[in-house]
Image (tube, rainbow, N blue to C red; front, side, top):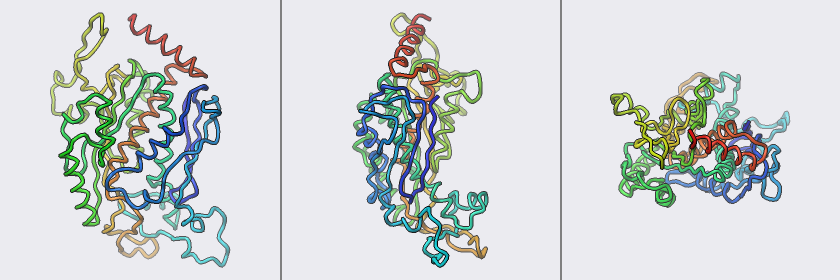
Length: 392
């Protein structure tokens, strides 16, 4: 069973992940992980933090001479900004005579963030102890995790791509994403906002500039497509084994994500069933197949063999440079919320994050379906299942 844990704070020394359940002999290219981390840092509208951090991963366990060993894998991403926060975030107790102001204490919660709820839940009088861990900086190491497991998926013929469908009120055309995967990748990778629509890109950049000038932020919608999935990943037999349910939970666990849909998603509500479901056909060459993919590649909690199509909604970032009203937790007086360094728009980065979070859930379902302690055993199990599917 694949599983992971992460640890670390946004201004701490490092972010750490432990991954268990990867089969042995999977070739691991650190450059491919770092490439995903670099993609996460790009995008028009990012803040000054991205000029400080140049994220790279160190693999400190579970990989030897470029291949997994079957042991738990340990990943570390160092925070370069730590040098500016080492005294504030030091794990050691403060001296008795230390100035409390040196802690950069936070006591004015930001609307939309975890500050107030987390402070009350954990009985913290310094909300920095909440915001440091709830920060989206944590997604750095989750991208590294996804980038690692997708190297196993790539061996098995699975490819993923994330891109932007909407920023603010600007929506890309459906035609712009109706391209072969390689062509769509080429377009979105060279776009400052990860779109394949030149006119939408210009309008999105203009909206981001307007929001920045007014001290505000912008959200949007991102989409991930996964190709090469066989029929039958996930299961219908228990609620927690449905692949779309697990992906939905993973997507909304990303900081600032508020919704998720598959295929037509919420668009199903306005259509009749005859315009929602994907009719089934058969011929000797294609076996069972569909001419449409309104389901987004999932039926009954299982993959259908069509591309998996997932969209997530990211709200505008909650840290505003013209902050909303809040209340000081000490005096209970009204104040403007505290300001922490932030982005105007992180939607392009969010598309990369969601892409890699979904890669993890696919890899987890892959190992549950096919099992194996080595990649050779996994590949044999995949080949046997594909033969069974073709003979059905």
